[in-house]
Amino acid sequence: MGEGIYDGYPIVKANTDHVHYLQNNLRDSDVRECIIHGSTPFRALMSGIREKQAETYTVMIDDKPSIMFGVAPIAEHLVGRIWLLGSYELENHSRKFIKWSRKVVDYFQNQYYQLENVVPADHMKTLQWLDFLGFEILNDPLQVNGFAVLRFVRCKGDKILLNNKEQPCY
Image (cartoon, rainbow, N blue to C red; front, side):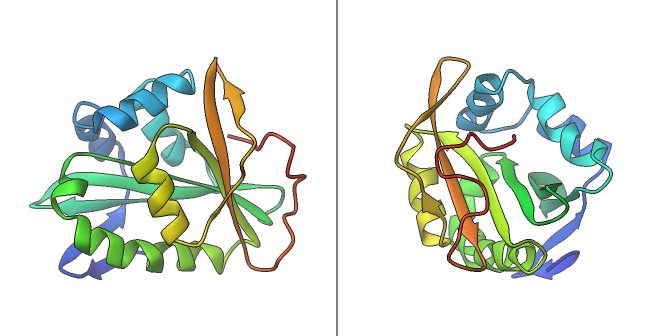
């Protein structure tokens, strides 16, 4: 999946210019997610660029950075922490986004046995999208800075590498 044109949208390697633009244009739910994790939008977006082994991309819509996403390796490339933060353009182009998002997850799944992260337990649209993408939503909420979050996991096989009860790395 990497860089290229997908359904008419360029996907390019993320850079700091994308971060500077997106930090002020994220959806409210994405800003809230950053806050839950004790981060600013700038720091959250930059983490994908700063992590040397991470793979981070930007979706350009009308020549503007609209979505940044990627995976950072955990546990020697067996497990990857997958993430996505976006502007409201994501919702304005939701059909195409849903179409290529499965391809993106499959691309990363080819590189990792297990993809995972956490999402606020009350982000119902995100949870439905993750279910559509084939992630297992683990039912036992975890607490991150006083907020309930749910761990989501997608594996190549049928065994979760890290204990179901264990808090994932994020």
